[in-house]
Length: 370
Image (cartoon, rainbow, N blue to C red; front, side):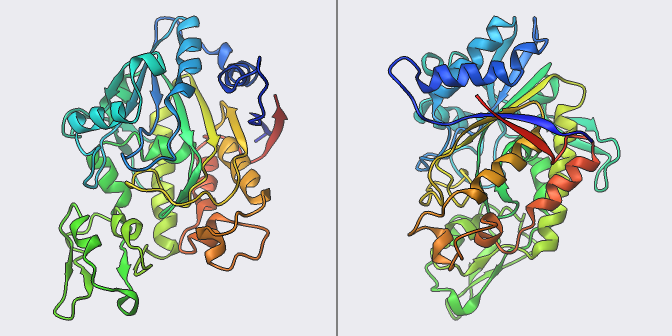
C-alpha cells in the first residue's frame, strides 16, 4: 500500500490566527472539504469525557468541524455510545447530562448530541465484517451504523488495554454497542497482585459486574466468570495491584477493535482528527486523569485512520518525556517507545497491523505541516 498523507499543525497562535482558525485550515488542507456530505447525516464521533476527567477534547474544537460539515451540505450530530462499566456515561440519560456538564452544548459545538446505542446501550445493527479473524459481523451502535458519513475527533493518549487510544480505538470500541463492547473486552482477564493490594476496596466499589470482592485476608480477588474484562479495576487502583492481561489478550482485543472499525467505516465517507494534547497515560473513561507524559504537540488529520494513529505514536515517541509522570515513574530511559513502557502488557502495533490487513489504511505516511 502506498504512503498516506497526514497533515498536522502545531499549537502556536497569534492574535489573528487562533486555534479554531488553524483547525479549520488543517481540515481543508487534509482533504475534508472534498468529502461528499450533501444532505448526509454525519456522525461526529467523540468521547465526551467522564466527569472528573479533564483531559478530553475541549468542546470549542468541535465547532469548526461542524461548521465545515454544514458548509458541505451535511447534517452533523455529536455522538458516542454508552459504556460497559459503571459511571456517568453508562446510559443515555446520564451520558447526555455528563456531556453537557463537560461543556458540549449546542452553543459551544454547533450541533446536538445523539447517544448512538439508545437509552440502555442495546440499540445496534449487525454490520458485516469482511475478512475478519475474530468475527463475521459487528454489533455497531445504531445511530453510527445508520449515519451516512463518519468523522472521528479523537483525544490521543495512553490506554490500559490497547497501549494507546486514538482514531482506531475511538471508532472500533467507541462505536460498539454494549454487547459489542463485551465481545471486544471478553479476552481481557485482569489480575490482582496480592502483595501490592492494600485492601482499600476501590476496585470493589467500581466494578459494574460485581466481579471483585475482598477475601478473608482483606485482599482483592476477581471472579473471572463474572468479569467483563473492562479493566476498570486497573484504572482505579492507586497501588498498581490490579494488572491488565498479558500481551496476547491485548493483541486479540486490538484485532477485534480493528474489525469493528472496519464495520464502522464500511462504504462511507470518513475523516479523522487526532488531538495530541494532554497526553495522559490512561483512557478518558475514568473519572480522573493523570499528568500528561509529554508536552502538547499539536493537531493531526487524515482520511486514513491507520496512518494518523501511527504518525501520532511517532510524534509522542519523538517528544521529550515529562518528569514526574507515569512514564518516568517506571524508569523511562529517555528515548524510544513510550506507550509500551507505560503499559508493558499491551501491544498496540498488532492493532495497526491488523488494520492494514483489513484494508483500513497504511502505517506508512508522509507528514505535512500546515
